[in-house]
Every structure is written in structure tokens, then in C-alpha cells.
Image 1: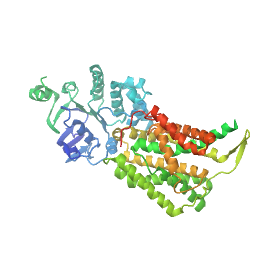
Image 2: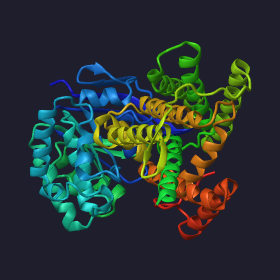
Image 3: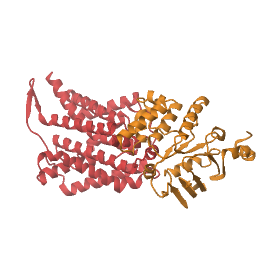
Length: 238
Length: 292
């Protein structure tokens, strides 16, 4: 099967400080790819490169059979490469519904957008209850739902979700992950960044461990659980 | 009663012109995070644009306002393409862009002076005539000003609040990274904001000059007041800016009537100081802007 996203030797950094030193990865269509590893080692930077928010170089940057390495963000979004950013980055003075509609900014079919809106409200009923509320009045869990819901509104084939559990209470994390499990069944290709590998072992098809701006290990979730050395090095005794 | 009608009418006229002059300033601040020091010249070129279209080119009078809008928008676009776009995102943008746009203002002012001279031309876009209401003589001109300003501001509000286009502008203002992740071309949004702000300022110029006369410096006084209004409203708050402009216009008209015209502006500044002591972030401001 040809990979949906195929990256070779991607480098990037902020100013003169390099953050990513040659990242290569392949993501198969309709799979769930988990990018794990400690904080501050380039996971979020990689996602920001993939969505075109920061400048980067790569030997290969192929998405759905097209080289989009030089394309600006809006072209990537139009191709269906959707990024749900860390910390949600909601539009704080807009209502929940306006936030969701922004997710569908590039879609022109009003009827289909309304259908997506109904789908998101069905998927996260809490958002339906809060649809007229301003985003900055939401709780942390609701914000996360709004962030993911906004990503869903783009109806893209590929969704990258950065730390869906960040800063949430354990009970809420469980709810969010229940949602992600549902999403994984929906036929989308998903890339999830997660600090804690154990949360994601269940739903991932493939995992990659990032350290010091490089991917240092990749394999199946089952393989990770047997790699005692990796677990101990990066996550302490498990 | 007659006095009250006069004061309210004068106040609303002032407020309407101030609102038009300041909404663009607020929009630019809220979206691009810059204080546009060339706003005075956006106002002035709008007025001269209408004057040239009607007085020089001989276009029909109803095209005066569209001409002013258009010239204002054009100057906004040129300022963006030549200056703002080159400086956005560079270190010290907030400070440097003030100096740069002040420079744009000086260049434009001298261009206008060069082209038209300092002669205080009369703005031909003007409606003469008046009617009587309960013993008060009311001219059509101030009524037209209030009507046109209200119409333009409502249009702007609808554009910003109710359309997909306006949502993209607000999204860019609130969080530029997130806006780009939604597929918004933020570069283009900035250009659109500069064009809208220029158009509104240009319209303000047409209306202001129709009450007095044209001069290369005519935009200076409205810009100072527009800046004061923006600060009182809370920087970047477009709706609050419109409301504040009307209130301050009414306040200035009242002071002018009872104490004399020369006390209008000092009293307005006094009120502003009181408001800022009470609410340092402005009436509608929320968080303090730690910049500069």
C-alpha cells in the first residue's frame, strides 16, 4: 500500500537553532500513527512543519501522491491535511459554533457543512449544549472537544492531533480518548502526539518515538511493550 | 427643547464622523497589532479624492462618497504592500511600524500639498437646504452625515460579524496560527483589513470636509480624536469604538454649547483621563496590552 504521508530527512528550527535533525516517516492511509516521546524534543515542531506553520526543508514531502513541501498552509488544509494544535488555540471571542464553522472555512457547500456540524454535535453532545457560548467560557475538556470538533469540520482525510490529553483531569482524558477511539474507526488517517505511550497503545497501529529532534525508534505498539530498555530510558520504570 | 435638539444633532454628527475615523484604526490595531500613524492621511486623501472626482473631473455628485471610499482603500492597500507587509513579523514591529506609517503620512501630506496647494477648497460633495422641526432649523447635511456614517458602520459590523469573510478577519485577529490552520490566507486578510480601514477613513474624510473645508492637514485633528476614542474604548475593540465615538461626540457638543467651542477638546481629554483612571484598559478593554 502506498503511504498517505511520506517524509524524508525533514529539518527545521527556530531562527538558527535547529530542532529537527532529519526526520523521516511514513504514515499508511486509514491507520492511527502515534508519535511519542518526552516534551521538548520536537514533536510539536514536527506537526507545525507538516501543517506549514514553520519553514522546513525535506528531501521528500509527499502527501496523497503530491509534493506539498513548498505549499503554504491553506493549500495543505485544502488537500485534507488537518492540524488540531496543542492547547487548542480556539478563537476565544467567538462562539463554539463560530469556531466550528471556522474549521470548515475552505468548504463551499453550505449543506454539507451543516451536516458536518450536526455530526460534530452528535459526536460531542456537550458542544451542542454550549454552541452559543463564547469559547473562552468553556472548561478545559470542552475546549479540547471544540478543538477536535473544529478539526473534524474540515472533513480532511488526515488529522494530526497534538497532545489531546494535555492539562486535563484523568476522567476527562478518558472521555477524550473514547472519542478518539471512535474517530479511529471512521476511516480517517490519524496522527496523535502523546507524551505518555501507555494511553495510546490501545488505539495506535504504529508508533514512533522522538528524541532530540529525531525519530529513534518506531514499530508496532506490541513491540514497544516488549522493548523494556526504551520504556525505562524514556519513561522511567513501567 | 430646541437647544437639546441642536446639541444632540451636533453631537451625533461629531460622533458619526469620529466613529468612521476611529473604527478603521481599531480594526487595524486589533488585527495587525499596529498603530496606524498614517490614518490622518487616509482621511485626507479620501476627502481630496471626492473633491477631485466631482470638482475636477466633473463626476456626478453622488459618486463623491464612493470616490472617497475607493481612494482611501487604495491608499490603505498601497501602504500595506509597500510598507506594512515588508515589516510584519520583524523584531520591534510595533515600534518601527509607528515610525514607518508616520513617514507614510508625511510623504502623503506633502504629495497632497504639492498637487493641490494649501488652498482651503470647499468640498463639493454637499447637500444644501434645511427644514424646520418644532421651531428648530435643521440642515440636511448633518443628517446625511449621520445617516451615511451609521450605514457604513452597520455594514462593516455585518461584514465582520455575520459573514465568512468577516469571520476570517476576526479569526486572524484572535489567533493567527489557528486561522492559518483553518486555511485562512492571513496575508490576504491583512490586505483586506488595510483596504477596509482605508475606505472607512476615506469616507470620514469626505464627510468631515463637507462640514468645513479641505486642507492637507485636515486629517490631523480627527486622527488625534480617533486615537483618544480607541484608547477609551479599549484598543482593538471595533464595536466598543463606534459606541464610544458617539458618546464622546455628544459630550463634546454639550461642552461646546455651554462653555464654548474651545473647551470641547480639553474637556474630552479630561473625561478620557477620568475614564482611564477608573478603567485603565479602556471601557471595553479586557487585558492590558503590554507592548512598546
